Structures are given as structure tokens and as C-alpha cells.
Image 1 (cartoon, rainbow, N blue to C red):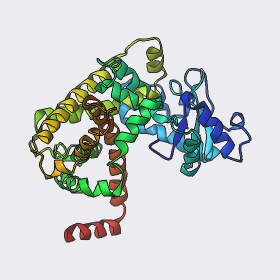
Image 2: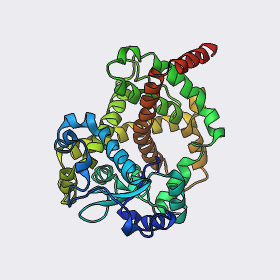
Image 3: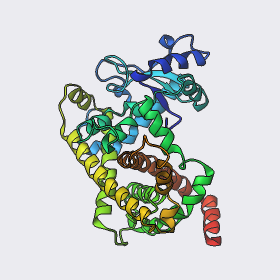
Image 4: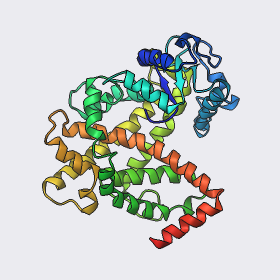
Length: 369
């Protein structure tokens, strides 16, 4: 569960029932208010018109964030708890899902589900289908299988999740990789002036640089066009960015969903699989190179403080996590971090742009550094 706006998909029928009991103003889930929904297309008509009928066009990807207007519309009309139709994600021909925008209430839902809670990651059918079509999808302990485990909620998911969240979220762990993050941010910021007309791209590339600094302890430097970067690293960054741009439009498209349900791989689905393959291959190379230098004692100071170095130490005590599984985990974290972090960077830049006092304070703080 990655945001305050969470949903209980068809895999989370139990979560929806718990949610209905917790929200006292609803006597049952069946009585929850909802956005108008239609078979096959669900509540997609609540999207702006230019985003509904052109979901198959690549130009629509630039408008993909308009889906947030639909959630805002639902919240303004019905409050914290309501239903909507999201085909390919929810239940039945309408694709019914249950929306809870109160994080305190949703925490209770997760706790009520025990060790294996369902979550929004299970609704990412484009990613799941792409991974299932890749080599090694049925190979236990492999990179692709490891990535697929994260999209479930069973015991394999729990073991991997418990492993990778260590040394990632605690303040003690953060103190280790923050110097690498700070250096990556300093290098990335130099590219901002050259990206004034494409700040979305700058934010995404900066996010990629920040994550690779924290995870691998490596300074990829993809955000500054003037800084030389290895071609393989740029291809890696582009593949991740292209994949994230494909996901939301595919999730919104009833046509894409129907093709997937009948086993047809569309052009966009094939492109997503290709981007995932490039990303997985490069992540595998980075992990293997890192392991070789870790075993030889050749890591630099940023790599020594990285998440991956700590994960390798812990892997010695955890037989369930193979080196290939670490590749799958790095792939998932990379894919998830770029989109989420770039959203935060974008909104932060927008807020700073309209707040001169905040700009002044930030400039003063940076100058002291």
C-alpha cells in the first residue's frame, strides 16, 4: 500500500468487508455510495472526455495523471469510502473496487487481514502479465519469479517483503545511504536549467539517479544532459521511464484489459515486456558486478553504505533469498521508485515555484551547506 488513496481489489474482498465494518457510517459494503459505473468500462466516463476515448493513443500518456481527478471527484461527492468501477482491477463486469482515502482507517484494514494482506500492487495486471511472459517466470528463486512474488500476497510475498524492507526504511539505515543520495541530488540538480521545458523528464531521471545511489551506491548521472554517462545506464534509465509511462494508460484502457483477458498481447503490452526485459537484464548486470566487487572487498564508500551491501550481508543468513531474487527485488524497487519519487519531486517543485519565502529559506539552507 503506497498512498493514502487505496483500493481493495477482487483479491481483497475480505479487506472490503473489514473496511465496511470499520467505517461506522456504512452498515455494510453493499450500501457504500459509488461513482456511476457501466459494464466493461466501469467508471471510466468520470475521466475527462479527451482521456476516455483516446486511451489507445500514445499522446494520451501525457494526460494519464487525469485519473486523479476521478478520485478527487469521488472524494468530494462521497467522502472517505465509496465504490467505483475499474475493469481489469476490481470484481465482476463493472470491475468494482472499494476506495478508502483515510489512511488511519485503511491501516486497520491491513491489520485485520493478518500476515498476508491484499494491496493495490495486485491490481497491476499489465506488469504481472508482462513478467509472466518473460523467461524464468516459473523458475523458483529466479529473478522474474522473485519480481512476480511481490505482486502477490501469499507466503512467498511475505518472505521477500520482510527481507527487502529491512535496511530500507529505518532511520539507522537511512543515515548510511543519505550521503550517496545527497551527492546524487547535487549532481542531478545541475541538469535542471537544461530541462526547463521538460521538468517531468528531469524529475523522473533525478528519481532514478537518487534510487540507484541509495540501492547500489552508484552515481548514474542521467539527469544532467551535459554529464557523460555510460550508454548502458542511459538505456536502463530510459527503459524504466518508458515502462512507467505505459502502465497507467494500459490500466485505464478497457480494450487493453479485454485483450489481456483473452490472451492477446497488444503492441503496448509487447513494448512493456521489452522494456521490462531490458531493465531486468541491466539490473542483473549491476547486481552481479556489485557482488563480485563485494566479495573482492573493492566497494567504494557509497557502495559500502548502500542498501544492496546490507542486503548481501543479510542474505548470508537467509536461505530463501537467492542472488537472482535480489535482481528481481532491485527491478521492482527501481520500477516503483521512479514514478513515486518523481511525483513527489514534481509537486515539491510546483509548491516551491509559488512560495518565494520557502525558496528564500531553502536557498539560505543550501548556502550554509
